[in-house]
Image (cartoon, rainbow, N blue to C red; front, side, top):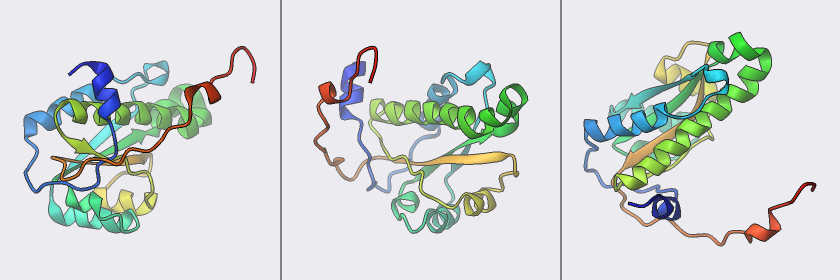
Length: 173
């Protein structure tokens, strides 16, 4: 698929078929994400691949009842090992760069899912400590996003976007 088509088709899918996502496909999504840029090439992003239905249901609770987290056959938890960013950038690395780096990786997963014929949704609303507990994350690892991935059982809704001209400023605000 052409890149412009992938971008145009990207949308948040929250309903999935029960069909499993093949391991090779998940691997490709992770390889795309692994190519994301990172501040100072600190590479803080790590992933937890969650297939176990019981663990996915615990993530639903950690995500304040967002049922689509448990409905997908696989959830990719995108995390940041903040020590890597902190070593080079201190507190700014922890609070900003590591999160931006994980967001870049997340977007590549979302775009890759479209190209693979899958649906995905970025979930950033969750209790950090509850997700840490469910996934066994150490204290220095920040969960940034949960990405339910699967074969779509819906077409994502299309919303009217603000006109680009109203969002672009030249030289100054």
